[in-house]
Image (cartoon, rainbow, N blue to C red):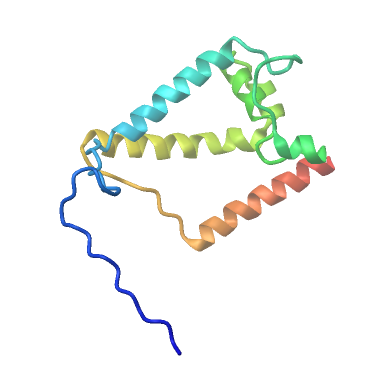
Length: 150
């Protein structure tokens, strides 16, 4: 014998205080993202300017990959390189992480395009094809292997 099927009770169309209701999202201006990123970057740069990552005991983030393996990831040295750039020492920043310095103009160009579109009231997203993503991942892997072998 099969159990009888039960029908769920219909929900009332508008119940006061019953169930979760979906809230409408607040509209956001397209420039909010780039301007928020700029504010966060300025706050981070201001904090980093007063800390020297070359000295031990500073309240700065650490690399979990380096902490676990002892090897350097593609981003290792980025905090030191940023500190060196903030203090005008380009050669030390290059020594800390050359790949990040080479990527900096591309990141700046991406940010400026996104900011320009946002201020004009348009949304814009960077779309990378599969070949570009593969090339970036390959470059990061080669950089990681190269810097750990030398």
